[in-house]
Length: 493
Ligand code: SAH
Image (cartoon, rainbow, N blue to C red):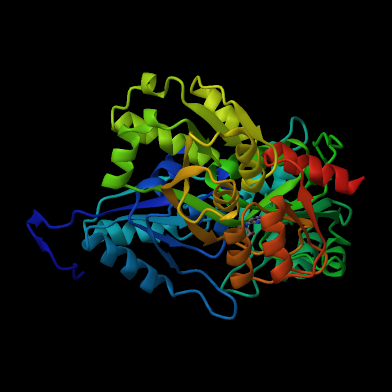
């Protein structure tokens, strides 16, 4: 076989390909290794089965879709292979991100062989396969003592349309069919004609692990009809056998069970908010993600050197606090030079971030930057000077308040935010907006269905929302993840 260029005895390739299993849901079901590789790779080549949220783990990487997209067919396997080879020969570290496990009906084996043929180093990273996990997420164990001593993973998508499903009827244990939803009626019929009892339990688990996951339960005689009347969508697995009747789930009725919330905000904020929402039972999805990037520059460095000359430092976000401390450490700023400098923060969480560094703020404003402006206008004396440490695109409310109160200040942008659209809030009861830039980004990329109410942090964000939508909205009283969860709980009462 002909080999790719660059093979003249010495190895010309410096690139590398990782065939990575993406698991069958969001980030929670990724392996630590997969996450590390996403964080550090140059290129991600991904399938349509991948949860789009995973791609935000690789902001630095070039992202190339090769799966089936709306209306388009997937790339032929040969062109995917060629793409992997090409990128590796360019010296790239490539993550080939595949749904579930790369070697379970993922054609990962073929890709590995092609890479080997071209002498391209590759590594496989196992993933949590839907073959086990989809059933498990629905409370169905694929094996169970005395009930199912084996399980068989079978593709129901075959080039031979007349595939004889009946032959699987004689297998003992649980049958798990992948790619079978379109053929479920023939499949069930064939299993019965092969000798399985028509009342053998069967279940279909669709979109396992996603916020719109659904499980349809029945038996071989009615499962196909139940699926079509429930309009179940792919991807789905079909489970046939005694354990398909089990539902090993302890459903705690939590206050937000059954409520889907789409969230937007900075990475740090999203991590806290998702945690709080899911611990109350909500299904969480990301709409817009803002990442903070530290701003470098001589002006900032010299301002930091003279920080002790300010009477007040004001922080408007956790990002501002963390980036300030990172910068301070880099500039070898001795924290004792903050002696006597007073601190102000917007929101409990910003205050908490300061406390975590051993600094207790004198002032904490509840709601938004606007309320901090008001508080400072009351507290700061004419001789005092304020340093505002915040994002480059911060709102003008706070500076207007300070100016009109005649207070001297420096507005120091220590970070800027890159705003990235992740996905639509379709089907969600709520969408959380934490900044006007999040609102703009969302509406520039997607529509909001009538039934989705917005939860806005502060009046400025609410105003930005009103400009883009007539949908119902509520304003969180307190600018924190907890404040948002409370606002939703209050709204649901
Ligand atoms: N390598 C993948 C399987 C690829 S074949 C794995 O290990 O999971 C694609 C099939 O996987 C789909 O047709 C469906 O049967 C199943 N599948 C993948 N993700 C799924 C999900 N989230 N929920 C239900 N089924 C899923």
